[in-house]
Image (tube, rainbow, N blue to C red; front, side):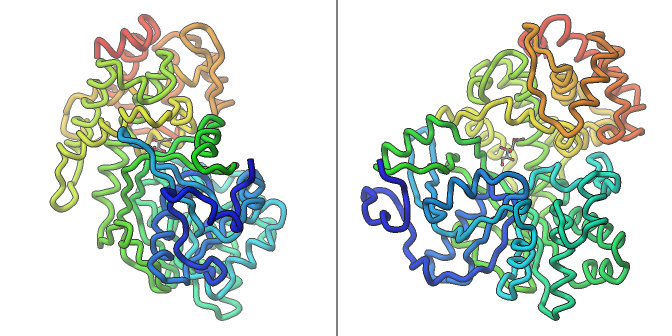
Length: 488
Ligand code: CS2
């Protein structure tokens, strides 16, 4: 079978959407760091709509900060890839043309800095996952001891980290009197724009106070709420998509029909009209973001840890167990009581839609994938809701189930005694703590609550929290996840 490529677009079956614009005429208005599946299903889809509508300024140069895999897959196919939107009622395919090029930062950091300093680039957008910000998850302050930060402060012209690239590119633009770009964080961080602004400014201050002032005063960091469930692509996906295209595609992305993007409208350097594809521009993103992090991601992580431990491979499999479904609803109900709602929000409808999205049988979203990087996710997904509930003395039993599931998971051994491939920046430390404590709830919970990067002192030392987590963990250890969830 031939490979997808610019010369073959005309051979695609008629029902497959493709760029309606001339790719040779698009400019580069966006540099995107972290060109993974999520960005290619979400931001690139909105940008593709703006290009299809005729605004040719907004081609994307993507960059990978670690691996060459995406570049190696996309380059031989002229950076075209297929977006497969899978719902209960079938699958829709669209070949996307918005990505013009992919750079691999470690191979040539200078090439990426050059791209970021192009005066046509008005936006640098980011999906580098929570850990990509090198911050302390409990406080969201820059982790100044992080090896990549230490490296980038010592070698500012050859950075490795997201912050190193952002700050060096902004410094060069300022020196060359090119206007700054807007930094748009599209990761599930709490108050993502504000948080990235604070850590980038701190990083800049460690280089030069004046530069820090420039970032704080002249660079816009709008906040966003991003939402589209996008599992890692599998070989089966690639085979099924190739069969429909009649061409092979080494880098397709599979996603759900739902997509939401709420954006604080602060773009002094301009932006695409992403509203064409349904993005919402607002003045305050915080209520949307909290609703999403606490309801969607909070219940997602709860399902993932407890589902994995029960042997469920995907979220949809987990949701077929009525006790898990009930727990997910309970977590959403409890988290919802802590929220300042977005204007006109229909919370009941939002929760119903989440349950349906989690049940989508056409998406195989592995629980293991969502379990990744728990140390970076727990604070904004579950601990914030727990803290707010404790402040009004409301029960937290259902919200602590996910935290206890995480504690059981990071021991690195499952309920059948088989090893768990725990992926987390703190995995080695968590494993050592677990090995020392043994599978004894009181000791394990107490030792893990001492990890300050995750649990701030006030929460860790609150006996109501400690007691509830320990009781949930004791149940998990004694009875296993399925029985513990059934009882919850
Ligand atoms: C998931 C998210 O992997 C995870 O931790 O909870 O990636 C989730 O699918 C997205 O935030 C949905 O928008």
